[in-house]
Image 1 (cartoon, rainbow, N blue to C red):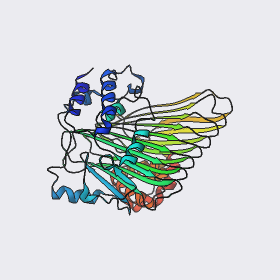
Image 2 (image 1 turned 90 degrees about the vertical axis):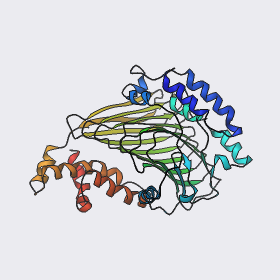
Image 3 (image 1 turned 135 degrees about the vertical axis):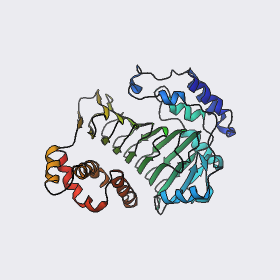
Image 4 (image 1 turned 30 degrees about the horizontal axis):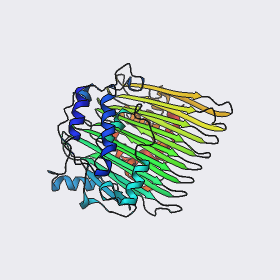
Length: 442
């Protein structure tokens, strides 16, 4: 047991947990203390630098105090202008002033007896804690969360927008979201993580659990846009039942340590998954995506595409695993990971995995690591662009193909100019980017 593990449990004593979740928290705390801390010899954490996190002194949970009017205005500038139901959390604390509530989404502390029973039925049931150490910590720290429940055959007319802000305090923050879609229900959910004010130096632990019943359909976005000094460990755990469909998009701009796990289980025949992601670490940032797609039953499909641009002295890790159980005949599964290094000091470790125990399947996986295409760069420079301008256009074109596939137009229109600005460009050249992206892949 490390100092970080013992400090984390001491923090839990500062909370006032809900009575009906106390046994759940206590069991998780025991599991957290019993598990070994990851090292370079731990396969799933081999390339993730946890030294800075291990040295982090966790002394308090976050709160909203000190969140000034100036920061409040900055918050409103950073919000996605969605016509949506909105729940805002500042340093893990619910902020009623900036939230737009509806009965479909309820905080754990406000749940009635029926909702409590639904939470207890699904909470922590999708994955085993032995593989997901920080999910166990999230359980041990569970004081508040959000339940999004859509009943059978209902479709939410508006997206649900979950906003998690850190305001620069050197503190711990625990965030939990439980999504339950009953049979043939439909919903769209946007999770947005960002920083206001001074640089975030604390630690964020976030966990989203999604249960999609037969025929349910979910569009899910997870946008990690925090400050460079942030430390964030998060996960998305999903169970898809018969003919359920999940379409997901993930974005990570980088942090001092950022680790996001996706655990996706096909539990019913006909389940479909389409997951796309973009990661853009720069300076000294680290981004680590680990995805594990498990096909347990036949006649399911999954398509996963992640692209990363690693700049300066940044580091990226991508580990994508597809597991095909022996009963999962007629599976169709594809995985693609492409990486672009724009600096000689940038680093990426990518590991696509296929583990197949069925014989009637169609599966493919691949990964590439490259630098900017010299022919495409020459083409742009011959038309009057500087080397820097050409590099920026080609870099943006590398990810623009995925950005153009974002189904929610407001999210697309929010992200595109911000990412273009990240590359140092106006949008006056983005009309040409799609064509240039094809050149950069040649």
